[in-house]
Amino acid sequence: MVTERAHTLHVRSLSKHYGRVRAVDDVSFTVRRGDFLTLLGPSGSGKTTILMAIAGFIEPTAGDILVDDRVITQLPPERRNFGMVFQGYALFPHLSVAGNVGFPLDVRRMPRSEASTRVRQALDLVHLTELADRFPKQLSGGQQQRVALARALVFQPDLLLLDEPLSALDKKLRAELQWELKSLHQRVGMTFIYVTHDQEEALSMSDEVAILRDGALVQSGSPSELYDQPRTRFVADFLGKSNFLEAVVEESHVQGFAYRCGPHRFVQAVPPGLPRAEQPIVLSLRPEKIILTADEAAGAVNSVAAEIVSWSYLGADIHVLVAAAGMSQLAVTRPTWRLDVSLSPGKRVWLSWDADAATVVAED
Image 1 (cartoon, rainbow, N blue to C red):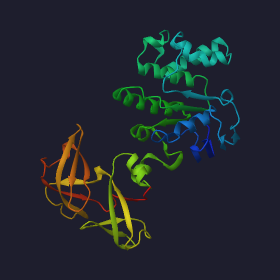
Image 2 (image 1 turned 180 degrees about the horizontal axis):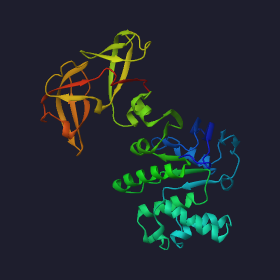
Image 3 (image 1 turned 135 degrees about the vertical axis):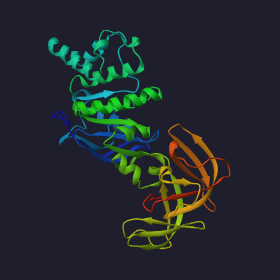
């Protein structure tokens, strides 16, 4: 549900240089009103610098930031009306939960009766009404994070900016709050901009993901688009796990092309025009798109014999590392309950995958 309080954010040719270091280098993107955009990248990729520039805490070297059609690049943070949630919560230890949530309203000198109503509504949103009189030291990490969210939302900001807000939590609680945060976004209908280095967080919560590397935007799109159609080896490798097949094209036709990896010949379906014969290419093949069988699968478009090297049991899934003659080792991920092959080192197995399972990626 997108509300009338949702706004569009435009980042145009944004750069931030520290001497010769280009922390952010000519980055442009748009966040549609009411969308949840995640800035994703490894440490040092520029994602937090971009968020701080949007918030007004960092002055860009070049470029502009707009809310709808209004340029805000030179506005100080207090005039941008953005909510901010930090990694360390930044709660006031001497204030109660209600006092922390109501602090932005006190700063804005909102009448007490209206402020009390807003605080109650914000606490209802994050399911903390019954803890209004407690102090931060009496709360769990997850509860403190909810207080920080309520405080950022209580004054009805134009945008909500979140800087790795779940990174201090354990894995189980982090997964629970991912669902809660996604649900909260849908309920408030506001534009969210989220920073993380965690690929699973980005995939599970976002409407759109912008992947950054060395200060540059390398690819943006929906989670499914980025995962299934990465443009570069870096994107395929960073967003999940992938096998990379280094190959040479044998022939190309309207429906796709045939390629050779070592002594093996495979086929790939792609739009016409790419690539040409004799062209060296790299294909990304996700481990879960490979089928593992004891015998060669009848009618398989692509198949190759291999030997089991090792495996890891992860409960719902099992990861198997295999070696095929003339190829680099391949990782295969299968649901544990669907694995029909008994695992032992050196055991001969067959791998197969569909013609549209792989994706051609550019070298970085």
